Length: 241
Figure (cartoon, rainbow, N blue to C red):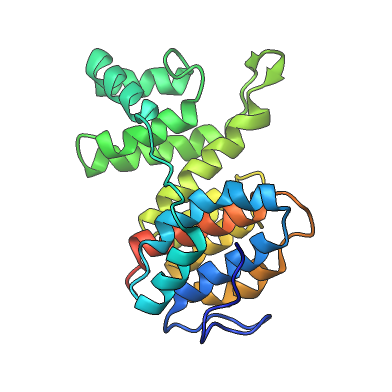
């Protein structure tokens, strides 16, 4: 069931103020979702639910409780990427793991950017962590003649490295490195990345009009990107100045 905007939410086209920003931003995403067919709105509700639970304002929570009802929350399964990285590091040792990553050998012959990204938190110390991150940047920019199912590795791996690194640099609050990673992605101008960048620079509420406006299609990706992007702000807070 659709509801009107929260009391105090910004008007269409206005930015979300810092006060009650989270409630306003979720409302902006809901406004975009309301323009979609009902079946697609229903698919998005489980993505709104965990973010609505983070709202601290009682009135906002009440609206979302009524709106979502008994909507379940998608539960994350086992972290396959971390498990793969842990197993490989344990089996080969850190140095050999890095070499296999560099050479694209099993288990890093598929999903190499994601497995290496999962290994960042498993590095033995800060020096090795930085070394792994720099290796990922280097691999993203290194031509690779290998093909998988007839498709050049460069056709997708570079963008995958960019996405994984952009998320990590957003979490680490490293703006210059975030922008470096962003340039490697397939869609550097996307809403998700704009919101991730705003976590570092501040003022994500300025993007509320872009969220409300949608992307002119009946695809759910615009709302998904809004929730994934601002979800990081809600989960991690803004980076310290």
